[in-house]
Length: 302
Image (cartoon, rainbow, N blue to C red; front, side):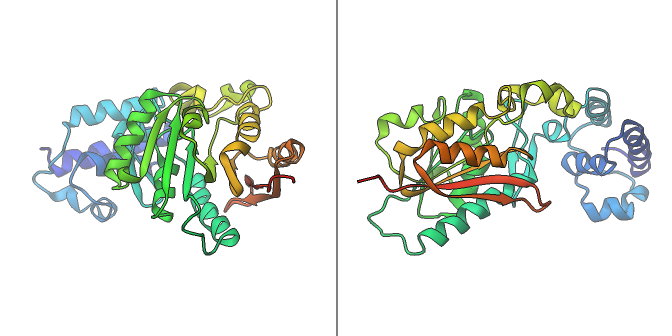
């Protein structure tokens, strides 16, 4: 417990530290909401200031230590509190996985829209199976499980630590019975299963190696570089997905990948050159950035 006045004073100082470090002051309240019984309204109105005591889940000294990690070491607040909001879920995160970004949320809506547009009344005899490759925290797999409640989702990641976090998140979100998790590289763990995918969705590493060091210090110092580094031009992993996906996709099966600004035309060209895809489309995110590329598995040539 701490007095409301002492906590108010701590909050004022923390916000000054945030401003000096170029960090959004809203992160102070994010940390406080996670470490106390205070809600957003109490923090906005500062109604706690006159309270004799405020219950904290951590001591004020521990809270100060966490905030100093944020300011001095640039540790992302999501890692400090251990969770990140994504769509309407709260996902467990650690430095073993990338923090799921808001812009990635749209990939779930795109998958649902593209599946409906192509196959509005899927035949019950057609396998309703999807894959999330490079699942990380499990965000995409969980999102797919929600929008395709009759589907089976296969979630793959090379990192066993990431797979463990993704499994925990699936349990927390109530969809673990419909997601199968695999540790390995891209399609390799699925090779022996003989599955035929209605769709493959991925947010792979796509940052060119040379510019990773120029990213925000929170990313450079704390997020897993293997989940970021896409090789010289950022497209190494995407090339693998283009080349490896066709045997796993049903005719008309969806290929859908997130990428960075400026890569969409090159990815579309890779898909065309590969020869097994049609209906190649570039999709913009809510900021107007060409963020996603989709394609269909072309019907086999006779």
